[in-house]
Image: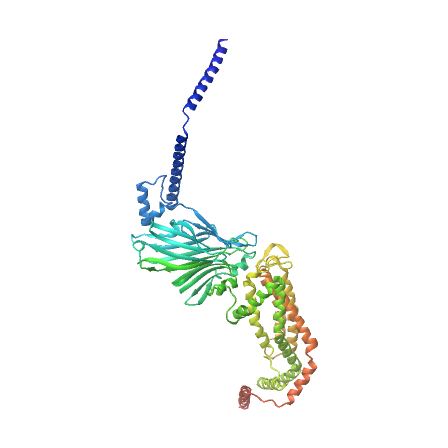
Amino acid sequence: MEEKKLDINSIIGFVLIFGILMYMLWQNQPTPEELEAQKKAQQEQINAEKSKQVQEQTITTTAEDFSIGAEVDSLKLLELKNKLGAFAYSATKVASKETVVESDVLALKFNSKGGYLSEVKLKKFVNFNDEPIYIVKENNAEFNINFGTNDSRILNTKDLYFEPTVTKNGGNIVVSMKLKVSENQFLEYRYELKAGDYMMDFTIRSQGLSGVINSSQPINLDWNLKTYRHAKSITYENRYTELVYEYEGGKDDYLGQRELSEDSGEDVTYVAFKQHFFTSILLADSPFKTGAFTSENLVRDEEIDTVFTKAFTAKLPLELNGGELNKTMNWYYGPSDYKILNAYDRNLDEIVPLGWGIFGWINRYVFIPLFGFLGGILPYGFAIIVMTILVRIVMSPVTYKSYLSQAKMKVIKPEITEISEKYKDNAMKKQQETMALYSKAGVSPMAGCLPALMQLPVFYALFQFFPSAFDLRQKSFLWAEDLSSYDTIAELPFHIPFYGDHVSLFPILASVAIFFYMQMTTGQQVASQPTQEGMPDMGKMMKYMMYFSPLMMLFFFNNYASGLSLYYFISNLITIGIMLVIKNFIIDEDKIHAKIQENKKKPKKQNRFQQKMAEMMEQAEKQKQTQKRK
């Protein structure tokens, strides 16, 4: 009973103590004024803690090789000053963070460390896996200014911290990244982003650093980029990934197709790191005095090296003016679209490889406007077909001339064979008589070659046009999902050298069409070309070409743009049709033979060149006869 009483007493005691405590708490509760004061004190404590954490993070990330603790004492500040000199100020003021800005076409991130873009995303495009197109991401790019200071230090801006601010200039977004020595002394990167524009204004300037930067040491701007893969065929994309630069007032050059390429130029106005259909360009309002460039191929095995294509570097000198930096430039991050680049009127269209000389002229002034018009009213696959039909119609007179020449040669072939037999022991006389026959009949053996040569500029221009046609990118037609890349009808479980691990149908169709086209033209040429004694058998060579060319086409174009294979397929089909029409309805070999016989009866006046050649051959024949008599 006693223990039970104790238990009850204990419970009663606990209840009393709890009641007393609650009464004391109620009596001592703070007034509203005291509560407000406590809340303010707590907020100040929180702000102080945040400031302390930021300071700790800034110092630690700015000088990773220093073992800096939670507080900045005088010893640690001294270590920073020993390492960074006047720029130790920035190390204690700026935290490592990213600044994000966007336009309707670009999404950008600027890192306070280095002050450069840590991420560039093109918002309107995706890659072959439907993933966003990133030009810069995850440390694949580096932008740095290397300079000396008057206290004998060599510093790199990529290791220093810039203070970001974002403002508006009308409708433009301005991002200022300042590397500070004090509040009024700094190095600034100023970016101005415009709505709907892939080109940004970019300025490097300094204020109050004439006593800090050593003017006697070179100041170099280094820009490096490892280019991401964006296309289905990394080999095809890499073929058109290259470094392009303009120098000496409008000249341009490129490098990038070897394993490792190096080059340099003077008075450099822009440098472009071209990734086939996307490009990064640094342009200067006033030329850099010199530029040194490298390009390294990162794709040695297309089954393993599948992330990056090439590594580009550019080293450009900066000059001080009155002890300060002030360089006005532009950045371009966007598509390698001829229309967009050409609109800037800064010679950027040279970045798109349309071919040199007449080939580039044909593309710029014929095929690009024509295809742009057709693509605006038709699906792109049909636009290619219509453009092919128009090209073949325009070139049909050339095809006619070539076929007519072959028909004429075929008609007089028996007479040439007769001359060859009659003068088989006298090559000079045989040549004279053959040339005389050509002259009388009004036939030229070169007439069949010249039309073919006239088609070469068009052929090569189109070969350059289709891989550079940005409008074809990710446009489908029939079974081809992307006319700027290869089409696939079957995936192979193994990789065939020079062919790939897939089967494309358009190259097969183009190869079949080329085979039948060459069978028609080769048969005509073999029938028309006389066999020359001591000369290679052209008939056999042409037959080899008849089989070799389609095979080469099949292998070479299996990884090429399906739009180009579609063009060659349609082009050869149309050419075959035109030749059949010419052969069956236009050219009459009997009429050609009668006309040749009529021409032979007419006196043929020789021009000076023909007379000179005849005289030379007669003199050579006389000398030969004289030597035989001796």
